[in-house]
Image (cartoon, rainbow, N blue to C red; front, side, top):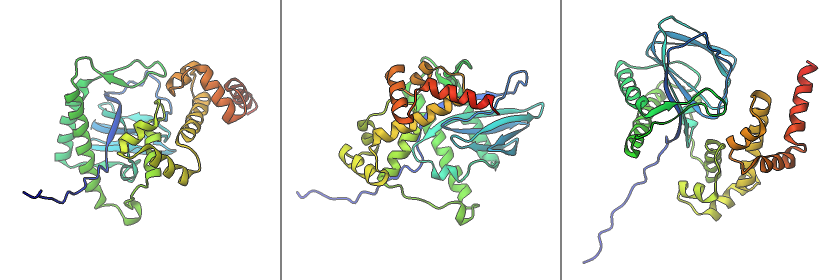
Amino acid sequence: MDRTIYKRNDVINFFTIEKFAFFNENNFDFTLPYPMERHDFFELQYMRKGSRVSVINGKAQTISKGQLMIVPPNVPHMLTECSEDASCFLVGFTVFRSNELRALSSKPIELSEDDRKSFETLFEDGVQYFTQLSLEIPDRGSRFSSGVSRGKIQAIKNRVEIFFIKLIESQLETLPDEDFIPKRFSVAEAVLEYLKAHITDRVTLSQISDSMSLSVPYICREFRKEYEATIIDYLLDMKIERSKQLIEETSLNFTQIAEYLSFESESHFSKTFSKRVGMTPGTYLKRIRNAEKQK
């Protein structure tokens, strides 16, 4: 008997969550400091009760009960005030491809009553799976609670993805054409998105190729063709740029920075920094401090 051949249709994962940074509720305590912060992942802010005012990239934004705000990666933001009854659900996460979500970022989004109930139920289920870490740098955020099964973690991940997929599709109808232009990623751009999402990890070419179901030689060739650099060299440059930001804006020591950015050791970090910047991390820090004194 001849084999029956069926046409198969590709399913494009245009929105995929890769990692969670935190999953917690903020009831606000202004006895604690709320400094300006910036991080390399998306932050969802959903007001369950009351309202809050935040400065996002230099612009004051107010979100009220039933609204949410999406803060993109590496955008400076700071809470400035909130109502007495304010309660905010916060989710920090990285995604593989972010262009669809960026189109909805940094502005209040009004949710329907059904979407509010859906998200609140989702959050109340998911928050049970996370344990908030101390505020000591660099170990901020959350980790999965002990005893939580892989199935429950994947289920909550899938539910968050479904929520965002519905949100993106519903919001597209209200956006002007120039605000959202669907984009098909090239292989090189997809690799770059992966590097951005995994800048603090120890990344291998095999991991990248596996995530894209493409061969290592192919992704290396396509990336070099577009960015005129090897994938690993480009990643190291990104890590060093991030380390300069950490040196300038935090109190992390060089060992902590090396660990945070997944260098093999502080020595490896220092050698890589010196090669790419032309000075040691210590010399760079001294220059930053001298420049601050002269202001």
